[in-house]
Length: 279
Image: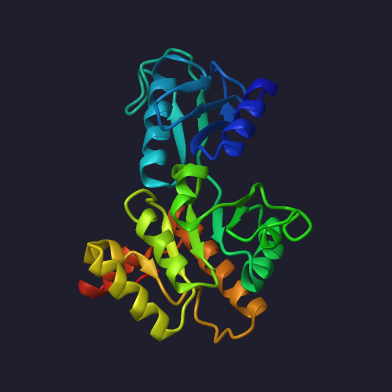
């Protein structure tokens, strides 16, 4: 990949924009591009770089679009021999193998409540290159000293959370707060604005109280059903550090599901309903 494409790929990653990357990984004979030739395709259909042009490039563009749709890459072989069955309409005479890779947007978590679980979670995320920001209405709980690696630390009222943050920037919203009423406010103002994954740390009693209040305020069952509570993968977590580990496991699982490498909850449910064993 050339320098300009490398910079573009890094910029897309920093902006959390998924993209597909196609790279010539093998060439035999006469071909229009050399090994390492790379093309990037964004979700808007914009393509940058080249793998050789003509019919080869159009086929690779289609494969890149497919990768963006399915979240899966593939290795493709092309014969640039018009006289050969299945060959591209080309007289070059050689062949190329092109690896198409789906590069997802990395997770970016918004943590409401800067308490002990948020602190433990914030210490784990950087090692995975997952981003996070922290919001609380108590200034002392979102200080730079407390969350030095957070992208943003905002003191904000529960009902004004999305006045300060852009919902589309985040993959997960975790409510790790200290006050059921304020958690309810965050949820009430989030479920119609934030399309990512939502998790609430709560006892059974708190969860039922919060859910009942959301329903009373007109939030639909489908929206309430989006809220994960309890949060994290089930490892019997009790301490803040253990809960943080379970939440990180959940985020990793979500990320792999987005890559198509583990079945999502929705896919597992469909497979179980049809008696199909998930891989």
